[in-house]
Length: 259
Image (cartoon, rainbow, N blue to C red; front, side, top):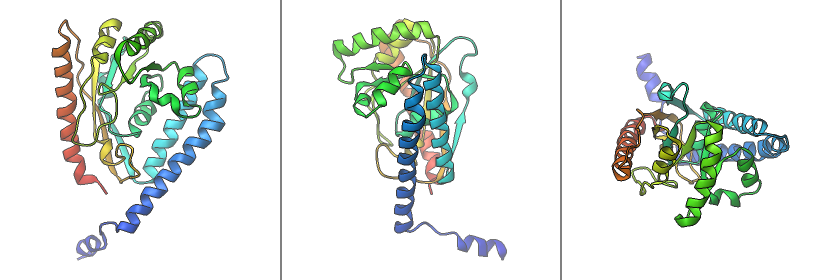
């Protein structure tokens, strides 16, 4: 009887409660972002070298994943052990949410990232990302993007750090995909590194760029390494299949935990 009574108390959130949760989470997100950006990350960029900026960014990502937990979203990062112990790798991730990069960096402090030049339009962001030695490429593609990647490749060869790239070049809605670009193949070939695919269902809970947030269990999963060979198209096809297949499975399982 007690079990029946307990179950009867549990009910779906009302539309008003759901809307309030969205506002609470995003208000906290922007408050943490602005305060830590101005008081911690931006001042850290004035210290010579990369370490202070990277450390401040990592603290910001930890604060954000902590806020996600407070708001009811647990994060599970699976199979980090597939990352090589000694040699760096290229991490190629599905991109469904603003939170993707935040969550990955929170679990991998020394990660370097390839970003589109659209990120430079946000106040302070361009300066901060450059101080963190992010690789900036032209989202429009073409020769300009190729030249930007060339510059970034030289820095990556010197750094010896794992690098994060989104093969689709931008956000995609749940259940959709964009064309996988060849930049990830070129990056891996030039650096002589394996590619670690990453699948996720985070977009179910913090979707794309929408003003929404849902509690539950979000999963980010590292998959088995793929080594780029001579055939770029075959590599891209294999990478896309690995990421999209596992992402679809995680999304299907995650729908049951969406609050």
